[in-house]
Amino acid sequence: VTAASSGKNEPKTAKARATRERLLRVAAQLFSVKGYFHTTVEDVMGEAALTKGGFYAHFESKEDLAYAAVEHATELWAQKVITHVMAFSDPREQLRELLEGYRRYAVDRTFEGGCFFVNLAVEMDDQHDEIRRLVEARFEQFRALVVTIVEGGKAAGVFRQDAPTRAIAALVVAALTGSMMLSKSAQKFDQFDDANDLLARLLATFET
Amino acid sequence: VTAASSGKNEPKTAKARATRERLLRVAAQLFSVKGYFHTTVEDVMGEAALTKGGFYAHFESKEDLAYAAVEHATELWAQKVITHVMAFSDPREQLRELLEGYRRYAVDRTFEGGCFFVNLAVEMDDQHDEIRRLVEARFEQFRALVVTIVEGGKAAGVFRQDAPTRAIAALVVAALTGSMMLSKSAQKFDQFDDANDLLARLLATFET
Image (cartoon, rainbow over all chains, first blue to last red; front, side):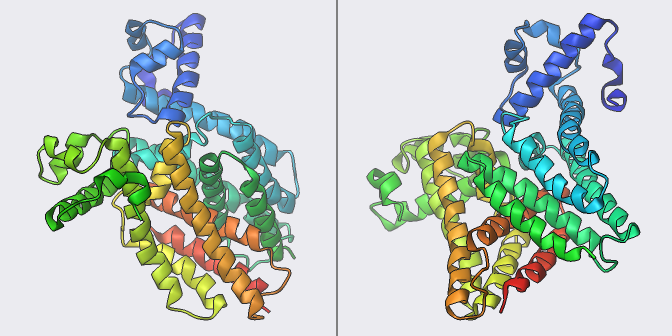
């Protein structure tokens, strides 16, 4: 899955693969807490308890690390949110559980710095177009998940045909990412509950 | 209004006041685009076309500048959003126009880097507790504005008594700040429209 962005550095041995994974874990956490620009290669290697020179055996540059970290973070996100949603088969439940799965992804502090994607999006929007596009594609993927659930619900006859699918996806992803940012800023997650409960209740008006 | 945070540096002359205002404008824009940590005093002075040494006649430190920039940004935000809302007297309209006022604050690019507060919140949450608290107080003020509108509407009999005021405030501020972040990341504002239209329509279910 990372071939496109860092094909040249595909690890050859199990040890190299493990080190690469460790660097990705550390980088995703550091980028989410300190930001991309404020994190140095030394920070990443120091946190991973490795010497700086070893970095270039795994990544060509900090940028190359960032591309791979986006892939790694996407996998962590999917493990929390998509796995949670897919445990339910009724699209009405899937939509409610998408809100709950994302809340857990926040409360469990999957990323120390809140949401890796929210943080990178804010940092990159005016500063690094290629990373911005990669992060934006993940939000698009998130909205597409909501669209799939709502359209599935329409096909199954449990959501009204006139439910505005695209707007629901836009509102759900906006509310969730906004709650993430606000919860991190407030250092408490209670507003997530309030906003999610109300949103679930309002979205239920689109059920048949 | 800035006395508490930077009382020692209250400007003595009209010229000093104008320079201080210019530095605040520049700093609010730079912090919103590049972030606080990634912006140097040299960046601010360079952008304001002043020499670095002059900075300390106006601010004790970059931190002191950040506190004053939060006040300055709050005034810009209030001019856009609160002024827009207060042009309407019906609480039902005020709630709809709060969404529209914030959308305009985004689309008009009041801050080049998106929302000053969203960007600083994401950067500061784990890194600078005092600035984090200042920014968080602004989100609290934003939610309080929604609470005032909804409670006003209940008193006027245009919102249902059982409308969940606190949850409405949490959802509105989450959806708006999330849409801001996502619009900046996508570099287009169309999802703001979708999310706002749907949210306004759903909130209308609380009207009597």
